[in-house]
Each structure stands twice: as C-alpha cells, then as structure tokens.
Length: 100
Image 1 (cartoon, one colour):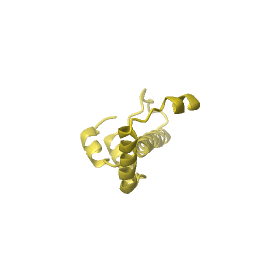
Image 2: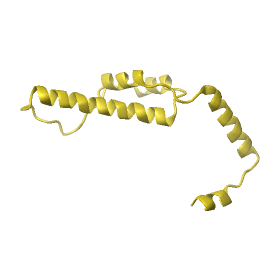
Image 3: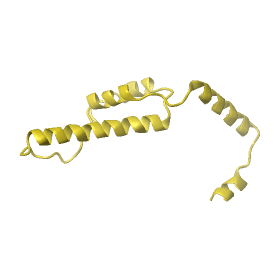
C-alpha cells in the first residue's frame, strides 16, 4: 500500500468488525486489479508491474463503500457477556476437547 494513513484509518474504522475491515481491504485490492486491467487494455504494450499496488485513493474509495455490520448495542452486550463469563472463571477445557 502507498499513501495510506493507517492511524487515521484506525480512528475512522472504530466500531467496525474484523470482517468489515477484511472486506474493505479485499475491496481495495479488487479495485487495484480492475485499475490494472483497464490500464492494460488501454496500452497492451505497457510493461506489467511486478507488484500490485493499492493506492491510498483506491483504499479510501473502498473505505467509503464499507458499512459497519455490527450494531453497537450488540457489541456492548457481547462485552458484558464475555466479562461475566471470564469473571466466573469459566473452564473451557472440556468444551475445547469436544470441539477439537
């Protein structure tokens, strides 16, 4: 990536889920591929780059298109449930053995 202010992005993406962030990054990558394909069609003799570059502009476009999938109310509920679970000293050994 070039020209991407990661600190600003982190501030602006507060409340986004990991899946939201992942979708945004993938969307920016797809935009970069499309951009490269358009350049190749316009000038087939142009040398192909060795690396795919996701510009800050494409990343910002992708960020504008993404929406929070998690409801803040649900996030608060999840944190409270997790805290209650941890505070009670839950032993997950048996559950882990069942899953694996």
